[in-house]
Length: 304
Length: 240
Image (cartoon, rainbow over all chains, first blue to last red):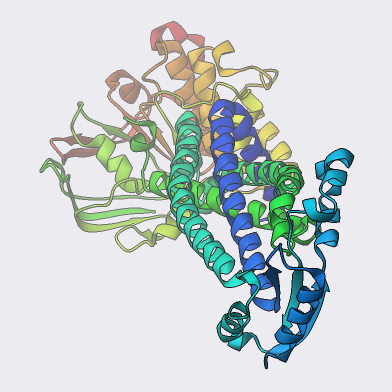
């Protein structure tokens, strides 16, 4: 194809979008919804994966002691924990320090009333394991020590998150698949409508010797532009929603001591992926419809 | 230029549109294809422009073997011919200039070349001053001249006119035929499909009569009209 034709073909493609604006708008809305759901599922899955790996990598566990136990007994119990073979480090974290963390949430008055014997929290040891592969055995040994009420079981949390990840991936896959087919169908119908409204032009183009590629290009450009527009809108929506949602979830996430993926790490990926998917779906939808139509000749194109 | 040898066309529903046709049309000829409705004229044209493929026989058009042509070569075959339709097939939203230019844009010609050539053909078909008119602002005859200009703009070796006077009044029909004869005088082969016997008798030339899918007659009759023949114009009433 000659370079001089490129401008003409692009202009024709963009003109098609305007001439067929209602269907183009419908295609964009459906594609934006599909991309946002896809992106949300993907980001959720990425974050859960990071949390799981964070938990797996973190060899620190909390050992909670009986809240009635005195500080002296608690310190003695610390030496027992340190004697266990797989313990690398064992740091005492007093119930007063624990209560201080809740000071803001409790308010001054309630906080004061919980000082001393009124403190409902127990003392805690933050224990670091030397070898994570012996995690379960070490936990059992710690739990066997008299005065230990519980141990933060990260394996259970990791298991729950893995299940959640699997669920998100599975549901996300089907939602994306169904919406993808719907989007393809809508884009393909939009292009069919454009082709129908331009059937005279197509029949004339073919009769004067336009190649199929030349006839096809404006429609592909139209579909790809719809896809690209949807990609840009969807990434803008998801990027602007990501941080507020992340902040809302931050309280819960901080409980398990790991962090989610910051926006700076993913925004470019979101834009590139969404625009790429949008263009690809657009091109595919356009290509399918126009290729079918181009097999027709003369009167068939005009519906005679 | 056109060579048909024992050509038959049978449609999937069993209709035998053309039966064992053999004929040749040479470069620079002016040929009328005549016959009643359903005779096979349209099928004959469709075979020439490869909208349909013959069931049997051999066809060669402008050097292309129509039985062996690859789909990707069909556009290049069509660039060797200009087609004029009975219903003009003009694009309503485009003006005269753009309707004609469209045929050049569709094959990727540069704008500079388009501007030059379009003004030449507008001049050739006598539509000067009408460049910015939309098709609905033109008479039937003028619309058919736009269609003719569009067929000519890519300098085809051959013009195929399918009932070019079918939708216009007799006076305009004469004008269009005059233009086609002028084009033929400059060396372009012209094939006109019509059922208007009066026009055929008036303009003469080679007449191929198709009936029942067969060539019934292939004759040459004396031409009454010639563009330089002023007697025709001095007595236009007699022609109309």
